[in-house]
Length: 258
Image (cartoon, one colour):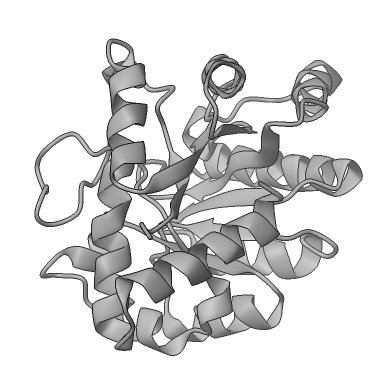
């Protein structure tokens, strides 16, 4: 019996895949990746994610505005996002959140926070899970989730916070998503976090086309490579790949209703 994995965060809606989505999906399936969630980061990329979900079995979509793309949203954008969530294969509002790595301007950061909270509110109204991007904004992300995240479930994708923060998030019912950086030599605290968090709160993902895991580092990442992330989780936790695949797939199904 083959393994079954879910890549819970990918971007086949990225221009880097425009010429070979079909082949990429086929390679993923051959590697045991039966389901993939494409996350939007703008209205345009969210629409592509929705269209891909319609076109391919096993593909799902998240729709949302990424912090780097933040703008003053109005009820028009709320309505567009809400309209997409009526479709059965749209499974999340995402990816949303904060990114202070690129954004140093105080006003732009304030805009990011407003748009993040607005989309959390939308997700709560729509009873949708969320996928959260948090880069160099751990304090504000946690503070916003504590205050504004009540009644919402979701994942901190490509987790880069501390163990203490992970513990807080798990207490609040959130999931932790791990991808390529877990396999890097300079992975710092992430391997220890992956060993320590409850297995029922872990998701595996690629964030393709970015951050390909070892041994593919430096190449274009793709959903098939989520297997290398799962293998690393298995090695760190003293589990088999089959066990990690089964548990993380169960988690993905529970969170996103796949």
